[in-house]
Image 1 (tube, rainbow, N blue to C red):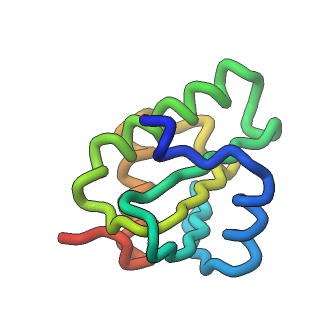
Image 2 (image 1 turned 45 degrees about the horizontal axis):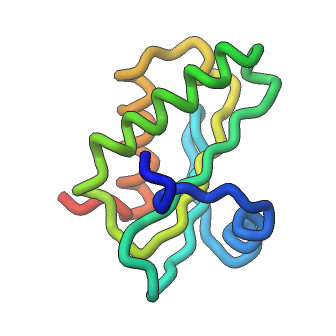
Amino acid sequence: MKKAHRMKKNEEFQHVFKKGKSFANRQLVLYFLKKEQQPHFRIGLSVSKKIGNAVVRNQVKRYLRQAFLELEDQIHHQYDLIIIARTPVKDMDYHQIKKSLIHVLSKSRLLSK
């Protein structure tokens, strides 16, 4: 994932939480906010310590980044997206996480068919 596609600052996260909308399934929570002046989407990932140790948390984040990389052409641009991983994610493999991500993105109508 390119640096321009990442959200790191707490203020950016808080802005999306307060002003944006959210959709969720059992594994993931998605917050999103439209930004008109942005040429591409940005993502922020949040994986709690409840998920597991650092190895498990980093693996979940790698899976999510890879899924976003593969879905990059299908996701509507001009959005800030925040993904929060829930506890069931720790027992899932890459394909299950990608399927769950596609589900929550299509539920929020951010995926173009």
